[in-house]
Amino acid sequence: MKKIKVLMVAGSMDVGGIESQLMHLFRNADKDKFQIDFTSTMANAIHRKEIEENGGKFLLIPHMNWTRPWEYCGAMLKIMKDGGYDIVHSHELFHSGVTLFLAKMAGIPGRFVHAHNWCDGDGTGRKTSIVRRFYNSVMRVLINSCSTVRIACSSWAGEFVYGKKMIQKPGYYLVYNSVDTAKFLDLYDNEEAGEFVDPEWINVLNVGRFTPVKNQLFLVDIAEELRRKGKKIRFLCAGSNSAGYLDAVQQEVEEKGLQEYVKLLGVRKDIDNLMRKSHAFVLPSKYEGMPLVMIEAQSSGLPCVSAATYSPEVDFEIGKLTWLYLDDGPAVWAEHIENAINGKRASKEQVEKAIENKGFDSRCFSEKLCSLYEKEVRLRGEK
Image 1 (cartoon, rainbow, N blue to C red):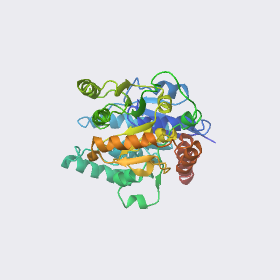
Image 2: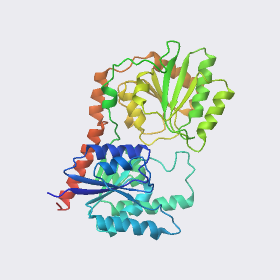
Image 3: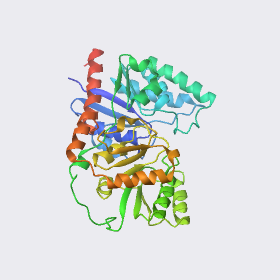
Image 4: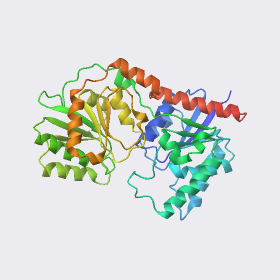
C-alpha cells in the first residue's frame, strides 16, 4: 500500500498557533501511512529542521504578490503537479481560495481547507473595506467550490469562512485545536521551586505575543488597580515582541512604577513550569481564534479569567473559566482575578475527563485528521 501524500500550505511554518497544530499532526501521524510535506515562505523557519529530519519535505515558495501573481501560482502548481499529492490541506484563511483553485487545476483529488479564524484580521474591524469584503466574497466562492473537505477549529470559524449554509452540508467537520496535554498532566501535582516562587507574591500568568491584539497594556491597568487595593498579586507575561509593542508595555510599567507587579519575561520554553508556579491565568485579548494557551492553562487546572472575544467552545466546562468584557474595566477584572486566585485548582481527574470529552489532546487531533485523509482517499478510489 502506497503512502498517502499530503501537502500542507500554511504560510511560513515558523512560530505560531497554526504551525504548532500542524507539527502535532506531523509528529503523531503514522510515517508508514502518510508522507506529509510543507510549503513555506521562510527559508529559516523554526520547524524546518524537524520536518526534514523526520522525512518531510520543506518546499520554499515565494510570497503572493498581487502585482506578479504568476510567480506564486507557478511555483505552487509545479510543486503540486510534481509531488503526486493525494491531498492538499490549506490553512490560509481566505487566501485558501487561491490554493484550492490551483490544487484543482493540478488535479489533486483531495482538497482540504481549514478555518482557524472567526473574523478577518484581528477582530478590531480594521479590515472591512469594500475591497476587502469583495476579496473575501470571491475567495469564499472559490473555497466552497474547489474544496472537497471543509474543517473548522470552532463553529464561529466555520460559519465565518464557509457561510451558514455550507456548514450544514456534507464534507464539513468540526475539529477542535489541541495541545500536548501530557506536558501538563504528567507533572500535574509537582511542587515547583526557584524562580518566581515567593511566599510574598501570588502569580497570575499571561502568555501571548506582545501585540495590541493581545492587549497586555490592559494588564498594566489591572495591576495598578491591584496595587491600589494593597494586593501582592503580580502578572507574569511571557511572549515574543511584535512591532515594538513590548517596548510600549515596558514604558507604561516603568512610568507607573509597577515593575514588581508586572514581570515581562520574553519568550519562554517552560510555560508548563510557569503554570505550575501560578495561581490563575488571564487572557485579555481583543481577539483570538481558538487559543491554544487557554487549553494549556485549563490542562494545568488553573482558574482562568478571559475576555469574551472568541468561541466559548474552548471552555473545559468544569467551572474554572470566567468570561468578562473588556469594557467592564480594570476594577471588575481585578475583582474576578482575586476570585479566581481564591478558588481551588481543578482536580486532575476533572481535567483529564474534559480533555477526553472535548478531544483537546494533540493525539486526538492527529487521529481525526488522519482518519479524514484516509476517508477521502477511499472515497476518491485511490491507493
